[in-house]
Length: 405
Ligand code: 13P
Ligand code: SF4
Image (tube, rainbow, N blue to C red; front, side):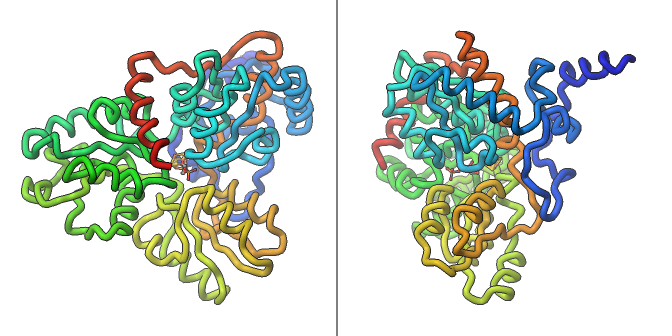
């Protein structure tokens, strides 16, 4: 095979998706952008891109993104989730957590194009909430979320039917975390349920209890468990639903006596944080504040001083007094940005091994460049479009959530 043919092969064959690029995580590895062709060698899944974008260095990519951005002006707005790399977030007109970005998509009809730098479910949500004249674009369609993938629609529908065999289904309110497919948001809309984010999970569960006796919470068991515990619901009134087992692996009586049924899903980034890491940080820095995301395990959350969404994490550190110290349990791109933005404070990641969310990481600047340059030439690539029926019901569940805030 000639070198040229080999290069072509790289752009045509997509390596298999990895949930977390553990093989590529190293202590203190820099988060600098490499040409896309080099990232491909890490065996992550990428969307195919024209060859010319594959080898562009960070500086050239930034210059081309800037130029395309200028040509488009106010016609495009770029939204960036807090976990996006620095080389993406520098171009975001607006950054935030899942709640803030969905509120934005629902309330700013000014721009014709919403370019969503985040993961799939966030771009889908923007499409569900956008105004009719707007178009949502996602730079790399393979940027999903491994937690969302742990709750396939059919598995949830099967669970719903199984629960109906042993419980009164009318008394169960489905609550889906934002990190789920549009299909599942629609399922909640159809079945008297609601969507929540890590910012409003408590309000959403409370909303559920005003309408039913039990809440089926998916896909993140940890957010569900941590929130229910905070609301005073004991572990003895929570059941864990394993989709691979009959009745989720529960005796019928356990489901009957439960108030919250937790789907057995998790985030592979946040479950890396451990109680040992918290204790080590406390031992090394006696005045440290431990600040973690509620997708961490119950044990870690119970050891922490503060728990909240990515926006809460960013705000808590920004508002903290100079000299304060923060060990943070969330994705490393956000933590390293907070460390840079707060040079008067000590900010570091609880986990010493640099391990970005492999899905968020897939928004390489080459994709941003490709989508913007096409848009500037009048071509829409990577449009996200939820079908009208799903959109209708998902919007109902999302609007119930937005009404909580
Ligand atoms: P936030 O809503 O806190 O931004 O969380 C989204 C997410 O995917 C965390 O892993
Ligand atoms: Fe999904 Fe976890 Fe990545 Fe958040 S950090 S997008 S929950 S895989």
